[in-house]
Image 1 (tube, rainbow, N blue to C red):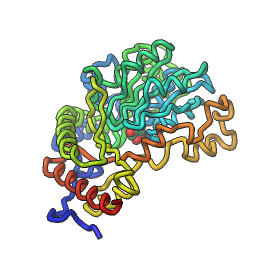
Image 2 (image 1 turned 45 degrees about the vertical axis):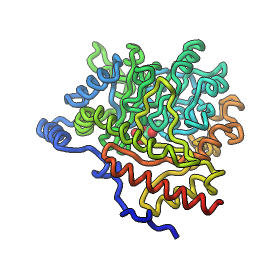
Image 3 (image 1 turned 30 degrees about the vertical axis):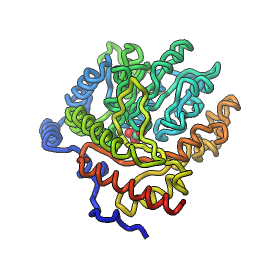
Image 4 (image 1 turned 90 degrees about the horizontal axis):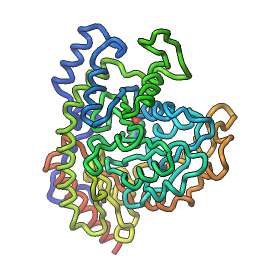
Length: 412
Ligand SMILES: *Cc1c(COP(=O)(O)O)cnc(C)c1O
């Protein structure tokens, strides 16, 4: 059977889970040394987290930025800042990280899923509109893989209905739409600094907003709602400690200085890969909305299962023999098919907050989401990062071409 690409030496690809695929260097080490030498590891007294926040806000073009413990925490902070009532509905996407969904339930709100465009796996104004109800109090859009959603129509819809928009930009650093950074279209933008994202400090997150009141509530939610610096500080409402430490802030700040370069390399490598895959039949390369810039957290292709029997899983299995690790379907199932939703495993046996939802809002049957079914059935997610060279791209493209040939022969 197929073991290696004929005539090509197997090549180890840079991996974002270790140093081979990450961009750590003396800058991060130097910043960490400074923090340790200062003896101040908490951001309430240190300087790195504050510098990270200021610099991030400036770069993205937002008035406020706050660092927090994770991308999941960032989503939680955003939802909490909107101060929803129990049972309020939040329209979101079924193709995302669970960390973007569990915070909705923790705030006693109801995740209502919009379907996606099967070609991009992103929600659209049309799919969001179909999921709105009288109870909708927020919309979350995820710019999946670093590819922007069609923001013009989505912003217009949110404004027309007067519903706050949250952008999950965990995978979309540097992504723009009509030359504007994603994360600044809605009321709040959320980012993740987890190991596998464009920039990282292991775990961490950032929220951004232009709204002063929302900013105040987000700051408080990260800080146990304690009014630091107020005349009569108190714990004003229910909140957690979601702070980032100075050690994480130091690494994140150094990483942020490398973001533009990392994004540029990812885009360059992705363009080369697209060029090389153009001629492979039955493979769809990323479709980017016209005024958008995709920054390739991952490089997702579509596999035509009429051309390649077995579709993405069969394709991935053969690719693996060439040492290219890909993810067929991206996530194994739409998030609402996980037990937390299907079995309503939340707080004891209460099934809260599902128990107080409109029945149609929590109708999590897969047949209601044809775009999601089709999108996941055809997507194959290829790794990419800023340590990829032209040689790596050529290797991946050759592996795909050779896999395509072999599978097509089996099918024909
Ligand atoms: C990674 C990710 C999250 C969660 O971030 P963590 O830092 O892992 O908590 C949320 N949403 C999306 C789209 C993600 O990719």
